[in-house]
Length: 368
Ligand code: ACO
Image (cartoon, rainbow, N blue to C red):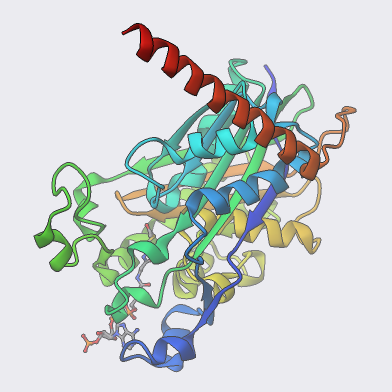
């Protein structure tokens, strides 16, 4: 049975920074309150011409480059997101087209902030079962587009960004070791964007009532998160045959420093064993874990052979964890792709595909 290895990773964050001082000008809050209650200093906000797909695409190119994979080698693209481009088509399909990943299936995965862990688990299960060889898992968000900028309870928490991992099959032991995925839909009302789906389609009234932005019972979500983070970490380590002490790093969902601190105390681990970068990005939902991993891999904290646990929670309610042995790019003679050239050919291919569809439409339209 092949192993599913994480062989490439990449992330992307918008350049525009929104600091706590900026937020003091927008809502009745203070830098001290935000820092003390959340640990967040600043967050990134997408420009008007940026979107979930454009951030996801940037992260994907970086991950492919790291893994030395060409887009044509990808079997499946999973985009975990709570802020898709549209209700449909899937954001994963927009990214598939822009990459020119001509052989890949593509779908979005909705499990809120746990989505990246769910996506990695699904991708690695497909590889372990020998159904697929190469899976691209993306977590991408533009939460700023569904934030109520008048609600101080929520607008200080969220930010935009994206991350992507390449999963590849290999006979070499290691890679993804175990995963747990859990849910409790009885808590669906604690954190949601109530309108815009089929239950409350967009109307003048839903817009006036602010139902297209995030509603959250912060205290209840906090209570739930502190309960499940340590528990899921323990479960996934045990399933991988590891003790908590065997783990070099825990990479938690970056929602609130106090939630991470509570998990560290629950696991009796020093906080230094947790990768934390929420002070720079806030809560970027599905992007938060890959953003933290990318930074830690880039600065040498996460090294080849390290055993790590990714653990998260989110709306749904959902939570989950995944244990992995860190691999790095596979030394199997893949040609290093040159992203600029690859992107150029992807655009040409995409143009001819569209042109073909246009001509087909003309012919069939004419015959009808
Ligand atoms: N500035 C100043 N005061 C504020 C602010 C703010 N930005 N926001 C809330 N307050 C006030 C509240 O109104 C409240 O005032 P009151 O006592 O007069 O009513 C007071 O501060 C304390 O409010 P609490 O809710 O008790 O504050 P708490 O310490 O719990 O922190 C927070 C609030 C940060 C939201 C916390 O509950 C939390 O992090 N919860 C989890 C949220 C989370 O992780 N959500 C994402 C889940 S992942 C996903 O799926 C997107």
